[in-house]
Structures are given as C-alpha cells and as structure tokens.
Image (cartoon, rainbow over all chains, first blue to last red; front, side, top):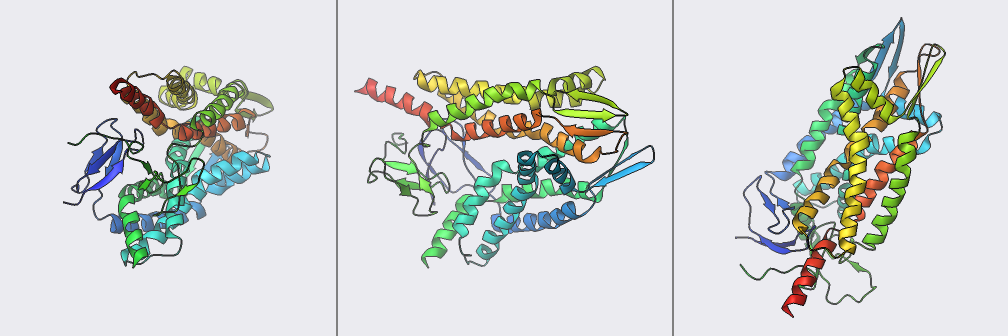
Length: 203
Length: 215
C-alpha cells in the first residue's frame, strides 16, 4: 500500500492518502477541500485531448469567427479582430486582457502540457520541465475560453433583433476546443508529474 | 488514527506549486526557502496575505463604482447615440422578455463581484477578530468565491464582440465605454485578492486557541 503525506492547502492539516482507485477523489477530513484526484491513464489522456485541442485552436484562430448581415451590409470578423478593434480604440489594457485570457493563456497551457507530457510518456524529461509545468499551473485561472463562449451567446441574443448573425467555422471549433481543453486539464495528475520529474531527474 | 497535526506544527511547509512537504524547521525567519523538487519559493503562509488582500480589495471596491455608474457601451445608430451602463443593459433585457440573458448579466456582472468583495471583507475581518466561528463553512465560502470569480469576465467579452462586429458606419456602430476598463480592473483585482488571501490563517487561530486551552 503506497501512501503519501500531503498537507491541505486550505487548512494545513497533514494527512496520509492511500493509493486511490482511478477517478477517486480524496477530500480533507477537516475542511472538505480536494486534496488529491486520481486520474485514469493520465499521461495518454492528457496528450490526446491536448493534441485535439491544439488542432481546433488553429481553426479557431485562422477561420472566420462571426459574421453579421443587415440591410445588405455584411461584416465578418476573426477571433483576433475584436481584440485589434479595442486596441485601435486606445483601450490597450483591455485588449491585452482579452488577448491573454482567450488566446495566449490557452495556447501556453496546451504547448506547456505537450512540452512536459510528450517526453514523460517516453520516460524522458525536457529541459525546464518544472518551470514550464509551474507556469501551466499558474496560468490556469487566467484561461477563460468558456466564459468567452458565454459572452458570444449573450452577444448573439443582444444582436438578434438587429441583424442576422452568421456563425463561422471558428465558433464551432472554439466550442469543441473548450471541452477538449477542459478534459485535458482534468486528466492532468500533477502529483504523478512531479513524482516522475523527480525520479527521472535523479537517474 | 494518529493525533491530527498541521504542517506548521510538524515543522513542515507545503510547497504551493508541487504540494511537496518541505522541511521548515531549519529555515531562519526572513530567509528565502525554495522547494527542492520544483524550485518554487516556499512560504509557511502566503506572504503579507492580509495586507495584500486588503489593498487589492479596497482598490476593487472603489473601482466598482465607476464600473457601474459609467457607460460600458456607446451605441450609435442613424445619428442617435445611446450610452448603456451595466445596470441599464440588465434592465433592458429584463423588460424585453430576455429573462435568461438578463439574469446571466445580473449575476455575472453585478452580484458575483459584489459578493466576492463582501465575502473577502468578511473573511478578513474574522481573521482580525480572531473568530472561532465555523472555520469549515468559512473555508467553503472561500472556495466558492474562488470558483465563480472568473465568470464576471463575461461582460467584457460581450463588449469586445459587439465592438468588433457592429461596425456598419452610420447605420450602426458600437464603441466600448469608459466603464469597461474599470470593470475589467474590478474583476482582475478581486481575482488577485482571492488568490492572495490565505484561508489557513483562519485555521491557525482555531489551533492557537486549542493550544492555549490545553496549556
């Protein structure tokens, strides 16, 4: 029985976690926070979902996102056009924020995951894996594609009685990408990653 | 089960990045300690947690006013200019039968930031007052605001999409209003404030009280 000791990040209580069955979650006995989640086949699942997400990301960035038709006028935009537009209006901070949360953060997450996980699959370690994986963990709260999707839906309703909205290929790619990235992240077993990185490092 | 102890009582510190328990007993006060496994800086508790959280929170609370009072979008349509605040947008949706969307904006843009600010102020005060009251529920409250905070960004994205899409010259044009930047700042600052608050401070007080009673 492999046990490992962990302190709860919310109440500091030290507890031992036994080997958990796949997909089981260990909660802190005192405050109820999640201590640890056991993932099934973590490395393969993470790589698979991330590769799928990366392909969809290319589509979401490069293809028409939303179009609008009204009284014979038509306008098409790509994902980056909106960001460009607020940048041109002088709202630089806002443009950076949207760029970071909807484009850069997901991109960094996906490249970071592949950078760390692909070598791990073959029991190797890429240079700076620890730094890259820490960056992946820190950027996670700032990756907000699912919130952006809700924003698209609200904008569609808002414009619904004013014009016809033509969703482009990129919107559908974006919608599926959200699920791929969510599944990729929920397949990540951080404990396993740190254990592996540590072991390979000592060889 | 053995006697329950916290990492601090055992002379250990939790690495926030890789969750390794690092030996803290040999670390001098003020000395920087780094995790031997992942290289992150290790702290026994988040540094200056109370001060930092207060500073971020007060700034967010101040900016909450211009964010809600100034217009967030300026719509020009055939020469008519119309400014909308977040609240007037919500009222428009509710009065035009779009209850679902109206509620989404109401919850995400007005209630969530307000709740976050109030809950964090409450949690900070309980630490200052050395409250022993229901630490488990207070921790749960903290987890809740940590989880929902990101959804406040939805209005920023709506504005971005409208500004990009509705550019039809004299016929219809949407520009971002001055509230956008304040609102974005509120969302970012409350997220940073949540991150800098250390819920373990609430439990430290419970343990210190426990130790005092046993002594």
